Image (cartoon, rainbow, N blue to C red; front, side, top):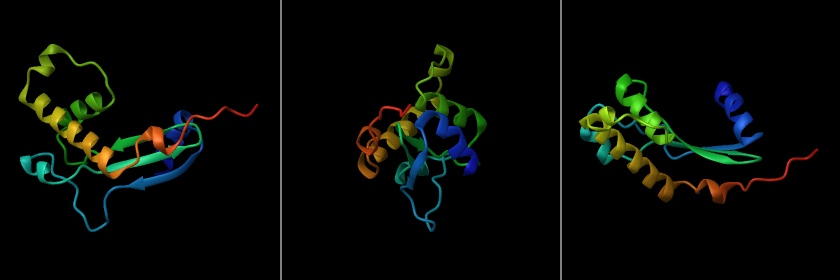
Length: 121
């Protein structure tokens, strides 16, 4: 967690709050099967002094190709037409869309959590 806070500090300002939308007794959704559709995605809302972000938690057992697609789609990074023509891409889109829906329902929107503030000089 300290490494995550360190990385986000540069983008969000001093991290002042981290919240999650799951309990310790709840299992991570299994993205390797269609069972993820019956569970909400695990998200972290990180609030900094200057901005905030919702982060999708990708389980460690997720295959590398799917994890890569999830991260690129969630970050709004471009993907080749070749990647977009695959069933795995459609699965990744469905997972990210479900996470965005979960974020809207379960976590405050980033714009509602912290508004950018002028930096002190």
